[in-house]
Structures are given as structure tokens and as C-alpha cells.
Image (cartoon, rainbow, N blue to C red; front, side):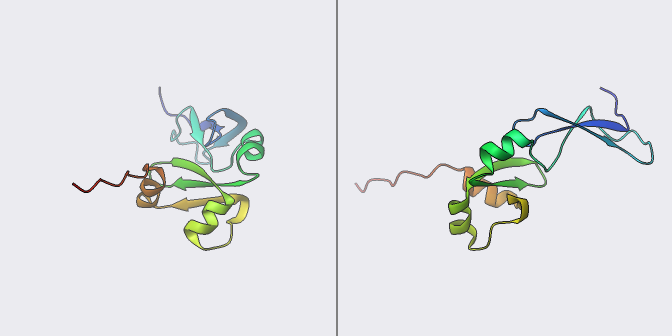
Length: 106
């Protein structure tokens, strides 16, 4: 699809359209049809961010929601504003990699 100077925003969690439009003020064709925003839709905010924090790996837009308690244990800091935080890819890899079973001694 061709680029446009207008795009529809989508929720970073459910990927549904939020109903908002973004406009490139120079009217340059920069956008695809949909653009993920950093702000979750109201339904996802209520479902996931009531007791969790949205982490976004900025370069790849990979996301994960972890509980408030897990965030506090992992990062030893206050909850971020709006309960949305950015992280490096390595942090995302650590969070999303399942724990390994210990190998049995022979």
C-alpha cells in the first residue's frame, strides 16, 4: 500500500483501531494505513494496566505487560507514569524467555 500523510492509530496491545487520526503537518507521505501509538485503548488500559505495566522495546515495538509487583521486583523503582515504560531489547528477551529446567547431574 502507498504511504500517506494521514494514518489511523492502533492500540499497542490489542492492535485495534482507536479512532484517532495522525496527520503529517508537512503533508509528506510518511505513514502506513495504521500506526501503533504508545497509548493503549481504554478497554486494554482497564483490562491490563489496572494491575500491570506495559513495557515497550522501542526499536522493534515488541510489548509485554507485567504485573505491578513484578515490575517493582525486576526494576527496583517506582511505577512509571501512565504505567508505560520503554526497555532495551535485551530486557525484553530476558522477560519473554521461559525459564530453563536445571540439568540433572549424571
